[in-house]
Length: 474
Ligand SMILES: [Zn+2]
Image 1 (tube, rainbow, N blue to C red):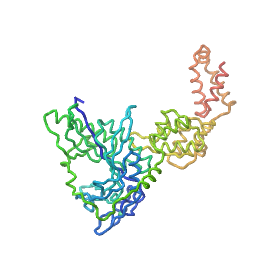
Image 2: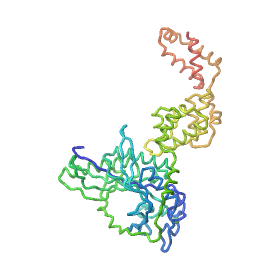
Image 3: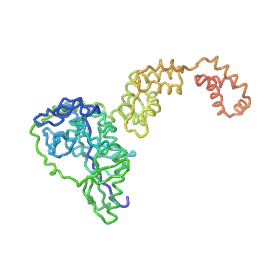
Image 4: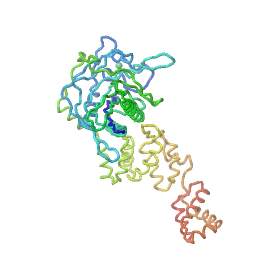
């Protein structure tokens, strides 16, 4: 914009979905009463010894392989020293010069164009606690302390908010499909730092960058990128200089502000962690992890189009969220016709599951319930319209679709004798519309169908109504 080029690199923090924390056996669960998922290790008491959670290492390597990273045969732990109340030990056990995963590449798509982002490294570290500011005082909750946190660092290969969002979307899908994280942005399990600079286009030199910390939703990432790009251009246009600094984003105000001058690595006094052995990963071990990577999004799209003959459009929509793709797979496995299941999921399930503004889809129905709804519609027991009431009724419960149909009295009337007599009455009462039809205006059939539905509270089988209508009007 205005002859400027934006350059963006990301540091993405992702909480791993292990059962226990990274260095102790405390449960790795979101929420809970403050300080109830803690022990001497994760609350940083002196003299305690950490023990590495092998699953956290495996998950990081798995994610690295899915992002085409080189995996280190030898990596080690380092202490990153800083003092802040959410970090009881006053150092974070992290990885400095020898991370688990090295260079990689993630391909993504934006408006039909294939693009890619190089990964610089992925390392594993522990999460910090959470400060709760309330009523003028600040309290600290250490439940999140020691939750395994994977940090993905990209090269500065992104140039706009649109690119960042498309890339993050792809990344989210990789993390979900590999099963290493549930990526619940609302619960903070994916947070993103944005390094951004602007420079005159074609100048061949990058500008000074700022780092905006801890963006925890796609929408705040988008807004903060647009804000920071404009701010830097304004500073440069008015003859000022960009200061290298760490910034915060206030989503309520819709603006960013300077937090502190940017630290360099030497400010953290990194040194090797003396309490943990280095991680040695022989090639055979890495190959074992590679073999455990489940089917990823691209492979699923190919299977849906090749084996299930779905249109590419359907395959793409269904695989956008792993939960939806899983529901589709299981519903087909339960016996549903793939295209019918796809249609119903794309229209009804996604309508209900995607609330506006929310970034995580809610799947409030299981495969058996969905397959039952599809069969009930398929054999004419209920109409498509009535199926929406059933869906509302059983959503987020384990109620059976069949019982719901009984309870709500939604059974469709397939009795052609009864429908015919109602239809005859309506035809007799509307000679003008009948004349219209006979004059060639076939659109008026909708009027008759509507009248029958009104008379039978929407419970007549529209197929039967239409057949009878053609017969009676001719
Ligand atoms: Zn613990």
